[in-house]
Image (cartoon, rainbow, N blue to C red; front, side, top):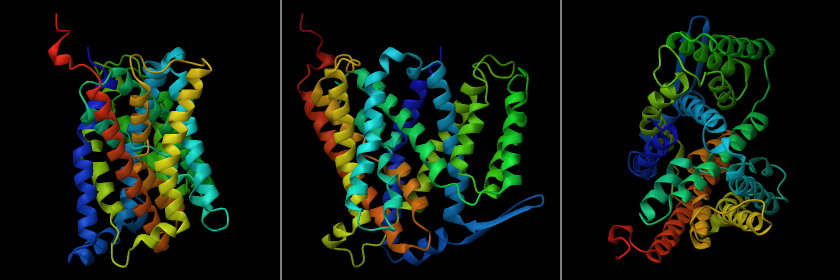
Length: 398
């Protein structure tokens, strides 16, 4: 029997190395003799025409608003599965990771706002340090130690799912601007049509493909966040049996899209989004309030919020900590939650105008530094915690 959640973890964790290499390539390209080609490529205008609809934007914008919509479609499919049949379907197992995830979003935002309180044009990026990158976090956890209990993976997955739900909601609320009524109505009508198709057990895949493409096109024209509408489109995909899909339409769609998202969409987004120049940089950049707020929010806020809430929720008996896990291991996972990377880069790129070079640089530098430090320290703590456990390969010695 296939297990979509397990396959999701394996695919996302396996893509962590590719994602890291793509990010490294972007940073190297932005600081090499090919910097002119790199920045020329990501800012080059590109036109897409679909019938009477014609839209021109930079390569960076198309990746952010176009290809990343596919990523959020997969996120939506995973959210629906987890709520109906996965980890989020059992309320008794959810209390501690859900409380920890919520605190892990609130505390980084508060830290960012506290640092930027005296700068009226900067606090709008407070949502940037609230997100966790599931691909990097799961890859780091998998690489840390083979002695860690499997409950930690479930704990981190649940955290990440709730975090994704919060991030998508924030994107939809904060970054949908100048909404156009008629294209927005088109989004609503197409979603309604998709929901109707979902009741047709033998509906062809092409019908869903066309419908989801129309939702995306109408979203672009309406000014609505394509990430939010992609998640809404995912919610219309049926999870039950389907004549054209052995494991159901939702599972088959999720399994089909995962490799493309994990090994193409996210690495490409990392490559075009993370590049920043080291020229002229010094330790004084950490004094820039936006950069400092993002860095402190991710590195300090995530670990304080997640670990503190998990400890408090367990002490007050709202729920139980992951089975068999120690508090040192939970702290290590809390550190990994500070790896914001793709999700934080995405939110931060929306928070600052594309022509705000300083703001965009603050996002990239703050997110990359915090993610690297959180990942390295989290893996070190988990590796140390693993050495305190008996090696399962040696058995019990009897």
